[in-house]
Each structure stands twice: as structure tokens, then as C-alpha cells.
Image 1: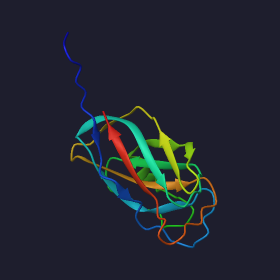
Image 2: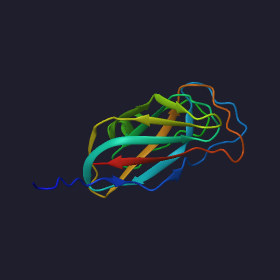
Image 3: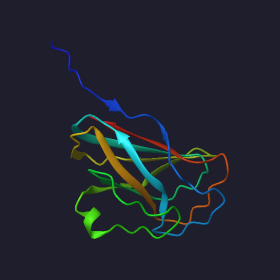
Image 4: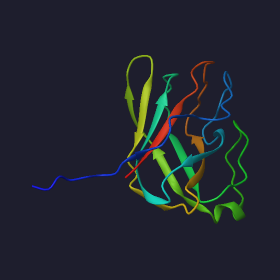
Length: 146
């Protein structure tokens, strides 16, 4: 029998940049600032894992772009220009949560195909709830490319 090999590339575990701690977010606010994810030049994002150390469990969207874009300020209504929207690759909805008492893990299984000639995807999170992140509890995330 021939062994089956799969190539899975987890990105680095990254703290969501620019989160304002002890700030009240509203649904549809930018959650942090623009981020970049180093990935193979093409592939399929098979998972996005969101580590919620503050135990909020509120759905998030990760809006992905093929190039740098003008980010929305943290804790402001997410707003992308028409020019930047031309480079939007899609949206990953993180809406499955596993609660472990003092924290939660959010997971998306998007099967999201992409092409990133420079090996970088750009994005920004959007919250769909009223987060209020405590100091020392800023969430982290990673993506898995298969």
C-alpha cells in the first residue's frame, strides 16, 4: 500500500493586531487593525482557528485581500473603499465555538481557495457582537492551508 501524504501548512500563531483592551465594540466594527498572513503562493485555507482568551464567543469575520488595503480603524464600523474591494478575495466566517470554561476556540472550515503570488494574504477581522477584551486576553489566530 502507498502511504497518503498531505501537505498542511499552519501559519504562525498571531495575536490579532491593534485590539483596544477595555473598549466596547459594537457589531460590524473592525476588530483590530490590518494584518498579513504568510502562506504558500497558492492553496486552500482549510481552517481558521481563533483563540478567544477572554471567553467572549462572539462570531467574527476575516475579510481577506490579495494586496494591502486601507484598513478601518480598530473599533470603528468596518468600511472598505470601492477601490480596495476590487482586491477582496472573500470572507471567512468564524461561527463555530467550543467553550472551555475560561476561554473559547472558534473555528471555520472555509475550503477557501486563493492565489497569493507574493506569499502574503492581507486581512482584517470584523466582529459580529459587542466584544470588550480585558488586558492580557487579546485573541490569537492561525490559518491552516492544505
